[in-house]
Length: 192
Image (spheres, rainbow, N blue to C red):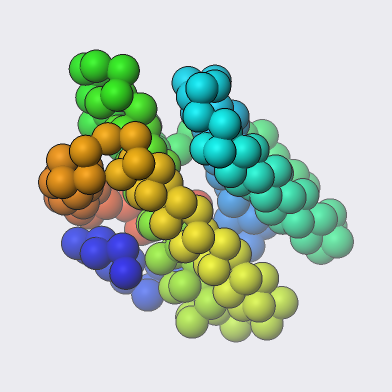
């Protein structure tokens, strides 16, 4: 579905499961950042009422996911740690074009779509490879949500820009992401 060029090695799930407290804390902060990103996009598109409405729903859903992860952390007696630096996301940010307003907005939508696509793929790997039954179910539900967000962001990009150019640019994003993801998959973080 996402056409990611380099799938996550299933052994990453073993690394993640080796430190559930860390993966949950990192995941919670990823959800908070996703909500913040959706709000940032709203500020760029006030004239697009329908898109703003959908972005607001995404932001609220991401905050709900943040709350769900936080509740799991509390229920398990884990310590909720400080926000983590997400090197993967920072690497992706470098690929956002700084051209025209339209190009910037389209690229920010594709940036969001890429993060959602990789997160969805990682949640699928967790669902299929961890022993923790509660988290298997939890990550399966979130995987579906992330897939919907990916579809929404790609759709917004095509709506706001020329669809053919957006599709070509998405292919560039996929190639770029494949180059950087090679250095990830060895830490107990969602993108690490």
